[in-house]
Length: 484
Ligand code: NAP
Picture (tube, rainbow, N blue to C red):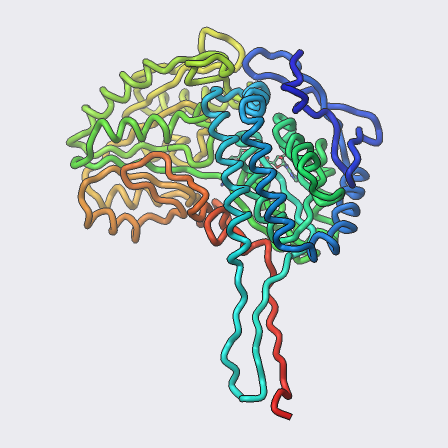
């Protein structure tokens, strides 16, 4: 079995030591394309997490006071280490997560880009000297690292979601305890190895795998953890927000989505199809910014559906490790069952399956890329996050109706629209209750821009100049008596 050029680490990193779990238990990691066990990782719990928090806490005083250029240089080295190992890291990511290898290469690259971005951005994290009301005073506003940060990440982007948290935390001078998703722990653990290889001091980055409840519980109970940054489901996010109250932790939450994709009559249909394929079928529909609901205006509806069907039918389904594959397996059987339930619910309410609709002949957790037309508001996918390769197409007549339907969800992460009407573009910007809006593009995530949802899709931003804010405390100091 490949160990991906030494990058598949099967231990936890606590205080600069690679260790197993205290009780010695392990968890199998499965390749979703083959069903094979790739390896095992420690089944860590409360004790391991408390030791990781203690190590991060002990490392904080020195790290938080380290030279800015020490941190910047280490982060640039980390970026380079990622890119030097891009191919092996991508293969490891595909082996445990299932996404096509070209997408995995892209995920490693954007993760590295986030690290570089925050290495640059921390150099501009300026404070202020505020005009004082009297001549004998000077008022200073300064920024300081928040302290120990806990980072909890999901399986769908197991590398880049951690990059968005490690980058700003380490740049700001925080120390970290990370908990990767159990389905995809290797892409998280390898960050520990790379940080160690490039010279981050022991205890600055700690990584614990294992029981979500125990690891999460220890993190949330600890008064030493000053901030929790979480990417995952809205349900778990709400639990963590509640648990954060007792120790008044800062929280940032990147939660679920239910993205609308609106195609107006004046759209360039070919461009809309290209955007639709990325926004719907990237990572087999398992991204938080994936389209959940297509709203297509009546005049263009049939032409759009015909072209979408052609494009979806052409998707190559297979083991993501093979070049040329565009759709891998879903993460597990639960994900497949959910898509099956959504399809059967839609069919029972009058939806038409015009493409796909069932498990793929490859077996396992492969599923046929699917299109359902005649979608209506009472169908389950109108409100639930699909997280699978199912495109639900609703028909609409006018702009106001489309905006109202798009907003009719508790989520507010990403929305897309295709139109050539400039006035409408700005009406959409005002009208759509979403943190990310793509006009004439189905792929808008970039390190330079703030990423984050509104409503129950979360709080806080990752990336952009805003991405550092949550990792820095602001202090105000008044220096008085200067004229005496
Ligand atoms: P999840 O079930 O909420 O799990 C996310 C992480 O939280 C995992 O590491 C999980 O550990 C951990 N966890 C679960 N229960 C916990 C608890 N009680 N306390 C502490 N940690 C706990 O989400 P997922 O299924 O991995 O990911 C899919 C979801 O993430 C979707 O809803 C998607 O939209 C969202 N997402 C959002 C963004 C964004 O930027 N807004 C990006 C990507 C994904 P285990 O793996 O051990 O259960």
